[in-house]
Image (cartoon, rainbow, N blue to C red; front, side, top):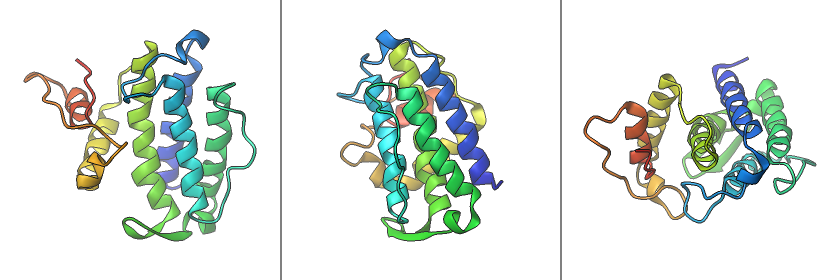
Length: 183
């Protein structure tokens, strides 16, 4: 298992645990993502997995509906991505994207893993779940966010950077940078 595969598996497990803990009545709660419910955040994460697979000629295949069971939908799609990360040829498949020629596993690391860190917090915040992030994940996500540059502020990506309280911890600072108010 590569470092990227390990990261994706661990973050995917964390995301799954957050989804499993959501009471049914909370799925339609507003999230920190403007205009999205907690369920919409999961729908975005599930859709994005499929989008990146399609860039290398792969498909998600059948999966439960996010409308019916967000956690089951996530479990189904992450199994496909994880399987592709475990296959050296599939992990190394390349596509031409916004950052030039990119390997599938590198795109998973840069985009999908980043989404899992940030959107796990979004779902937890929307549903009253555990919002704590691992400090190493906070630092890693902050590095990724810096690499995105201006693309981070594109339409539908992240809102404008907020100014966190002076005494804010690393997690609060990251979330503020991503346009999320956690205080």
